[in-house]
Length: 403
Ligand code: KDG
Ligand code: MG
Image (cartoon, rainbow, N blue to C red; front, top):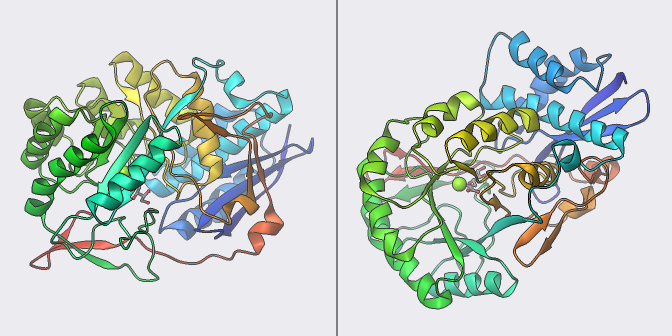
């Protein structure tokens, strides 16, 4: 089944998404997500200028061979731009294989290992009252797991928190990066009180998660993990910058709070040590940024050997195509942990028609052949690219800080 055409569509239905469409001679069309938040056009160019010309004429059924051809053939390996571009091709080819076989992707990946995929939603608040009200809304909608984030008192702005009663999470909101301030002491004092308020509001029957967004030093992370232990967090995410991995040895010496990391990882080489030394409990790499379904499956298989579970990134800046792909893989692997589900803002639904469903805290990818996502290119053309950047964080003295 020869690939006859491939094109990249950059659109902004609610936020920016990069979509790869791959056509075959048999008429089967596959789609892949190539969105890299704030660096969208770099991946679009990598695909358009370097990979698509080499893709035309290849056999769409040779997924692993195509992956190896682009990964090894480039000479330059890894990195978010390269791996997101390869991921989009890989995902589109799996979509084609599923459609050609008339089977939902999860059947090609070994079939379901569970009935549904446990997902966590995002509760936010400018105040603890706003946060607990938002958390209660998630619980009322059936969520079994919720991430909790709130504005840190004393800081002018906290990453991802809109405040003023707005609880949706959208940190990429400036045509230029907005500059926020950060002060760790205030955060470390505040975070346990946030957990205490959340437990007081909803009890211990729901899993609570928290994201530290890479902002702590190793010993600060150890202290926070220890302080949160009485509130039984499901995980503490990204406690320290993910690239400095010896930090996780130190965190482990100080706390039994489960640790999750990996949303910025793009290959198995980024998490090999963390997994094989059991320095983390959940690996958060995604289909879209970690080389596609083929490569992420290898990461999860490695994790399975060491008792590390999956917990894939699923922010709104990954398109519904990536979310569908994640659900298919999540449904099959033995060491699934949890899947992030932030959802997508209108008018994303006009562009991406999805089959996946949510019921009582669990999602299912649906039984349509392939990924189960219909991408409407005409609708996408109505929402042109709209450059947006994540904020930059500075300490009180002006030094640039991690998020
Ligand atoms: O592009 C950055 C977002 O995806 C990130 O802020 C989301 O940390 C995030 C999360 O855990 O979803
Ligand atoms: Mg995160």
